[in-house]
Image 1: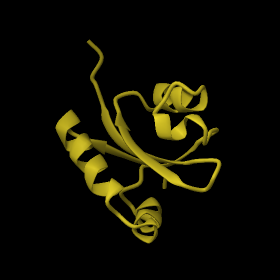
Image 2: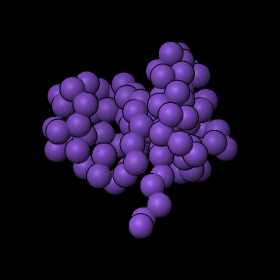
Image 3: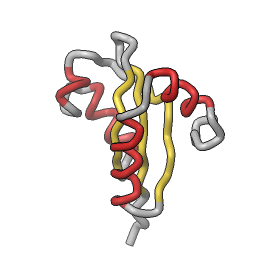
Amino acid sequence: MKEKHNYTYMVLCRDGSLYTGWTTDIDKRIEAHNSGKGAKYTRNRGPVELRYLEESGTKEEAMQKEAAYKKLTRKQKDALILSKKNLLQ
């Protein structure tokens, strides 16, 4: 059985805003956002570009990070994107 990964991610939307979410399959999720089948927030703001990716041990942990990151200011989110936590760095 394939091991499931749990990710918290941020995407940059066409309008310059950041959307934060969690997923078990980042490629499939980005494809969903870009095809208009993702979150309602990104449907009219696509295409999106992956800017932040962080792996968590459990679904619950990924969801907790998502909730916490959504409360950050834009400046704090930008700092997180540049941090060593970001798997894209």
